[in-house]
Image (cartoon, rainbow, N blue to C red):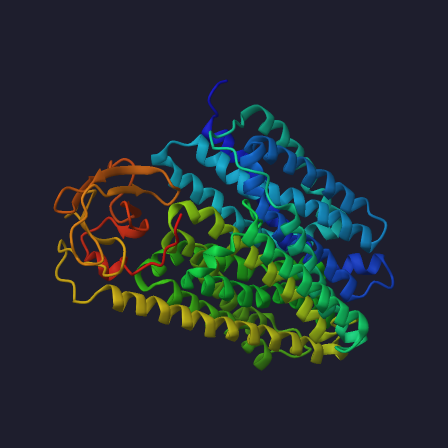
Length: 581
């Protein structure tokens, strides 16, 4: 079999990832037209077009990587792309709202199979020194999809709301045919059968919770159907927890929540995306209902925020590397909260885009651009390499669960029958208030995350670090690592000590990049010292690498280190909780 062509693999995997991401943003703008085509459909029913997709996507996203490890990444990727494409056509042809919801659930299964496998296929196609740029191009697809979603959705709705779904079909077919020709499976160890029952627990638990919240405006909090919904939600989520603790290949590896930084980041993600998902719905209602704008004009008006995300997300990594994940996430949550707060202060029933809607869009875009990439990066810096897949699945699932809660809570707050008419402007304001509240909850948790990071750093660094080139130490039971970057060289050097401060010999130190590719490897001498030279072609000065340290009798440790001449501990060597692996 001939080797895969990296450029062709990037095009195919990026096209599939683009379609999966686009569907999270393009459908909102078609809500008014879909609702008009199905008289009697209220906002509660329409919300399931979003939540049906998101609930299933969240559950199967956690399983997709393990399914691919079991049956082959290329096979699962192509199957997911085929399912997504066929389900998109089914959405367009559906004769009722509930059949659209059913087709959207199938579509979500396909999208969940595509997203993680597309990344693994991309990594397998590129050599180590080119992976960073390739992954960066792939990761930027989500931001581009968010930016294009509203205006593209508006243009397609001008033809018909059916085209919001049909647009996926030709792109999916081309990507499928190309994928059959250019994709090859990476060489990975096969795993056991993943826990499908645990994934079902996620679907039932989160879906029942969303159902109960959506029904509260009409039925009331104490009604039998709402109480049954909450009860089923508890049963489903408890089932998932029990299964995750007992199954050898769980749907979600909840053990990573023992790491405080990861647990807090997941909570921030849930709270923040609750507000983010609600914003995507309420602003469409406001601009098309209260202002009377066409879907096309509303789509263009909503594009400003995502465009800010594209720019800011490129800076978020540098900021979190310098100031920490918690402080950057805290700043992002405050920026996001300021957006709907501005709308509450400045907007009324009369259109005011430049002075009212636009400033809030810029603020929310700033918040999204700071938060999403920052929280996603916590996995690589807080968990050992073998846990990166589990940590990423957990963070991504938290994001989707927050999206479901956001739409469901919005319907609960503004009412299932709201259309956004000027007479219903009070409901729109209630929706904006919900966004502020969700962002402020996220800010409180982000502040706690910043405190935890700060305490780890204070515990880790007992003394001030001197000028560049000196080495600082991390004191903790288990392996203790001292690292410094060489003076303008791609050299990582340091010393490994045990909990009593004694040097550890024969400890294996491995330097890898953010994609997991090995850059260098060294073994400590009798003094516990090591020096690993990184190939200059594989990592540039100023980039971050991850140093993995393992020694008999100690838990393996992972530390994020900048290849520069600054004091290492000042920038990157905060204490990290780890797990036995």
